[in-house]
Length: 273
Image (tube, rainbow, N blue to C red; front, side):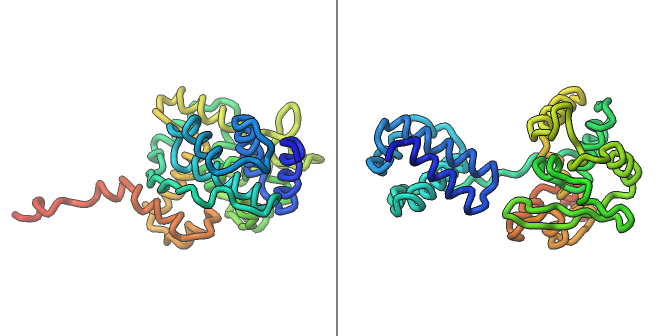
C-alpha cells in the first residue's frame, strides 16, 4: 500500500467515524508529514521513525501538539493496519495553562472599535453565549426559536447538541439578521457564501489591535464568558452545560482565572487591628 492509498483509507475511516473537519484535517496532515519525512511505505514505518520525526519537528511545540500528533498516528495505524506503532512512545504531560480572558471593560472596548454592524453582532454573540468560533459560523436560521428566546447548537464538539439562551440585548438585532438572510440556510454568510472560521478570527484579531488589547482571539471571548459568569456567582455546573463541556474538570479551570474575585480577598493583616 502506498502513501496515497493509506491516506485515502484514513480519510474514509475518519468520515465513517463522524470525526470533525478539524480532526480530519489534522490527522491527515500529521500522517502525511510522517510518511514524507520517513520516505517509507506506510507498513514500514516504525516507532523509531516517529521518534526521529518528533525530534526534528516537534521539540519546540507544546505538549498538546505532540499528543495530537501521536493520537493521529495511533488512530491511522490501529484502524488501517491493526497495530499501534506509538505504544512504546511516552506522551508528555499536558501543560496546565490558564486561559487568557478579558475584563468586562475590555470586552466593551472590543465591541466599540468594530464598525461593521454584522461583524459587531457576530462578535457580541460569541461572547454573549460562549460560542466556539465553529459554532458561530455553523448557526442556521432554523436553530433559533425567537418566541421562546432560545437557540440550539447542533452537533458541536464531541457530537453534542445543546441549547443556549438568546440574550434580550441582542434579540432584535438577531431577528433583523434572520430576516436579511431569508431564503438562506445560515444566519451569517459572506460574499462568497458560508463564512469561514478564519473570517471571524481576523475580525476579532484586528479589533483587538485597534482596541489596544495585548491578545484576544475568538476563544478568548468564550473564556471571558465563562469567567464573567463565575464572577457573577453562576453555578459552575450550569456554566458547564452552557459551554457544552462533557467533563466538569474542563470547566473548573475557570475557578483559577477569576481575578476580579481574587481582588476582593483581603489579606489577614488588614484585619489585625
